[in-house]
Length: 494
Image 1 (cartoon, rainbow, N blue to C red):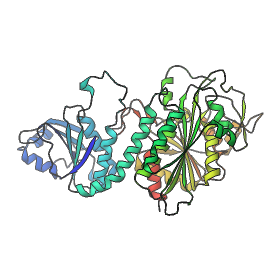
Image 2 (image 1 turned 45 degrees about the vertical axis):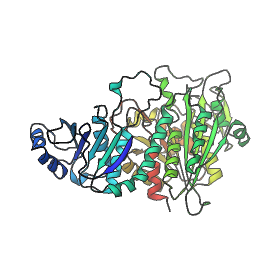
Image 3 (image 1 turned 90 degrees about the vertical axis):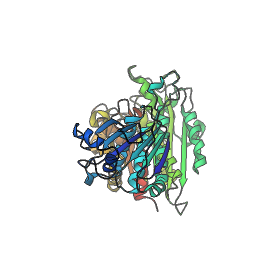
Image 4 (image 1 turned 30 degrees about the vertical axis):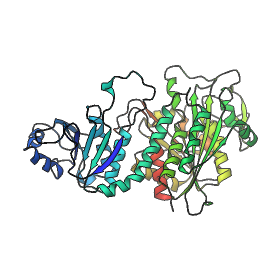
């Protein structure tokens, strides 16, 4: 997809499509009024015969009237003027693309009202994310189902300034796309070693990459992480990603830790067959951390940041971990494994401890497709936020509102610790169904040391087979990339 920024009066040509972003009850203001005059009032007549008001989410498709240099015209509502912001621009532009993507037009011009360069850039971001497709394994798809739009021109009175702002938003978009690609890959292609190899290629962005194999992790005492992968023929990996963008390269970093179970059968506590194919997505946390680190590096963020990926495959062969096993974590704490399908927290236990022990971070945030319980609690549009630090929690909630990666604060009641008390070890890895997402977070809290920490349970948001959001086609969402980038931009760059 090629993105260009052009003058406000740009037209796509006789074979292209034109989308006009209009504000509620101001459908013929500005550019719309000029187009109406060009077409002898045809747009006004079409509006009068329909119910289009410019409300957010509305659209009206027209065969381009005589006198208009375009094959088709689409009006897209962006809501009331006093509520128009960067997010509204992004969603309206994404909807415009979705409306015409398979129309046969190769060029789409999106005309915006008089808005800021940042809002114009966010429109380009919306189109870029809306155009995402994971189609590398499709060989027989019919031509009429494939998108035809290859060039999108964002037309406004601030083209030059918008192009400058786009350098940052383009980096974020590529981070989201990277995360979506990783989540979408089948597990026979993307296993722990391959995931690590792909991350290693990001050195070209200026990132420092280390890869620890099982031998190195065994020396560090990571019995909790290694236990999860012992039933797989694929070797587990721990990947360390560093970006040193602060003025002081030795300053304490912000740290992100991602669960990377490249496929989760449940192990000996095997999952039901129905829906197990979606367990290729159980590395959504690691994908989000990878995408966020790539975005920070690509936009040259003035921050030191570290990303830790715990990469394993959870399989049920003769060497697999059993319910009732006791493992020793890097922290020295012992864990009774009650359910081998509660494996993500075992991976994160060692990854979190390693992170805080080695890097002494300013903040530490883990992202994980951790529990089905969070889906029951919050549905499919909100991720759960748990934190031991009020300032960090508030900053994350603020970043979630701006980024669109929406969070909901969840409790960490200490009385629920009783559910994960073990008869034979320091802690057990599950406390049963009641409060399942909460007890998982309480388990993780035992491995964060004294670091300001937040846990994001993104099982509800990392994968949407039936998405209703224009910027997120069905499948992998890349949830977390924009959230982490916004958090850093607002609070930790210097």
